[in-house]
Length: 289
Image (cartoon, rainbow, N blue to C red; front, side, top):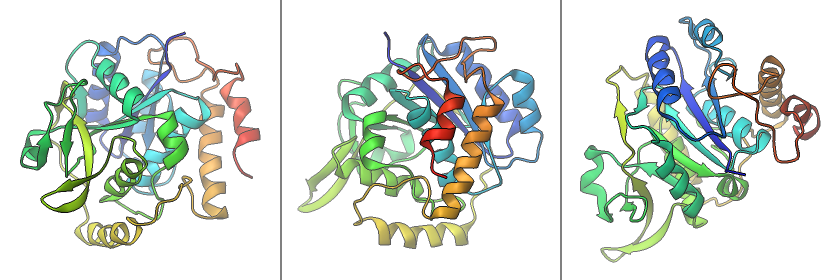
């Protein structure tokens, strides 16, 4: 049986941009065993109605920031649907080539975690050509497209929900995974031990859209990231009981809403976890009360 690929699109108030991204993902993804889910962080611009009209599976809730929203997609795809590889795309990041997902699956399967290479990061590249066989080693990363193996998430966990808004949540998470040997590690650079991340060029296009960045929030997240960087432990998508109940309610609502699963294309067949249990039955037994 081919591996189960999960594609998660992360969005907030970019209805028209997201619509185009969905169209390109559906048009250019070739892998037959693929689930697609949009994680929506409380959009108020008609995104929900658009997704429902297109028959796209979604998991959503009140606005909670990038870390929480990415965890919605990651947990649903990796932990509940048991996808072997999960690729997260920002809503402004679109594939440009038929079969674009293949290199991401190849590298994530082999090393557990990989980020996208972009021209503006080139000065931070240390080695490598950026092909699946020869990933770039970089001291800096960006989050427009990232792939994870289920194994890497099982050991390293999810984004820390203490990050709010936007900024630095992805760096802290990638450092945590890299220190475990997934998608990088610590290397000697100019006499100093530093974390090196693995990147590939991704056959992607990046739409020019305004950012929702809040400078004060970014600064707060930087302080948090600096505090957490040396704390190497597994992170659940929640910190306390209240967050766990909220997260469980959001995942359970998504499963109840999409009892037919989360197929890539409208009318596609549902893909259940390896044990064959329908995903909507898992929510009541595996997620914490």
